[in-house]
Image 1 (tube, one colour):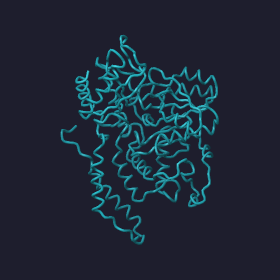
Image 2 (cartoon, rainbow, N blue to C red):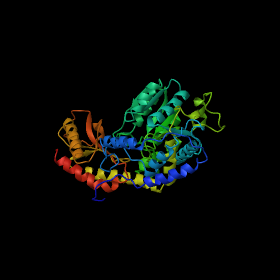
Image 3 (spheres, one colour):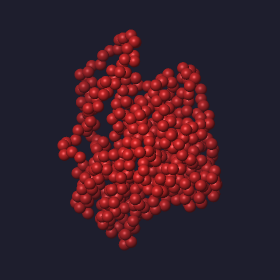
Image 4 (tube, rainbow, N blue to C red):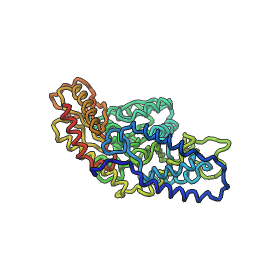
Length: 454
């Protein structure tokens, strides 16, 4: 870490100018269009105002921002996305995004390959919500009238999506590690009428991974469709420093029926870039529709024919393709190492918290999310202290997050008054590769903030 002041990275802008010149060559046979030239002075004035307005943000790109799931896109993703904007392709039909559609298919196939899927149906979407909607829509078509169930710690989007799709939804209790409780699920399945089980591979609150091998065993017995919401955690199957139980879950991830993963979380992409993968390509029949003007420029598959969304940004596909060319999705590679560093950072912070008598912790982090709370005589008092530490840390540029979680997730002292069933706790998402080198600095600020508060 340098003692010099922080500056946003700007050196790569020259690479964009060089690439833009190369892009320009591909179209120089066209006659002049006569387009009016932009007033650069007026644009500069507006951009200055934009830059000033954007100061009103937390420093999401900096390692001292360790709160919500905000990770800066890789430089190559930013540049490739910007380069594509000079064309602004639409990856609905091939005549709207010919090159970018091909790049999307290649990039999505590489993601599917992480799970061992050579045959699949998949595409990019605007994010995890739309990706999960498509997966549950297909599930509903295959199991009409049947319930969708997910754990109490599954993302709230599943319940909302189920309402949109007119599917009955039900939550299954969690165990003390914030994972779906398998005996509770088994008991619910015995009653019948469950068509789809959603396994969360990396909950957004704690990073918990539902016990996939046990869920697969239940699928063999009950015949439900198993969907994996791996929007946050999916890429971690590439890393080598997972706990044994987590590793087993990832080793079985390719056996589910559908997977959602978000490149705009750990895939180093700008928002919004999600991905839905369906193992059985024959479910493409549910997408079948006619268009009087869209799909006639090529006999090849148009991405709009296997997507609920129509217009979709080709620039997202270009950025993802470029990133995966620079950083292939391979175990032992540079991309995997960055994820390993994030997990190592989480484990390092967890150990500091675990060893400090001022704090209460949950079970060790499975991915790169750490959750803890200050010790106090009562749960309500600990909740108040969490909010005060959160505010004090922010005063010193350390930005954490707050979460409301069941007290059963924490190792509470026996004498603690459990006057609430949930506790307001502190949460840190150490998803930037740089976080590993910044753990000591984060701890230094957190220590001071706690001493000033408790």
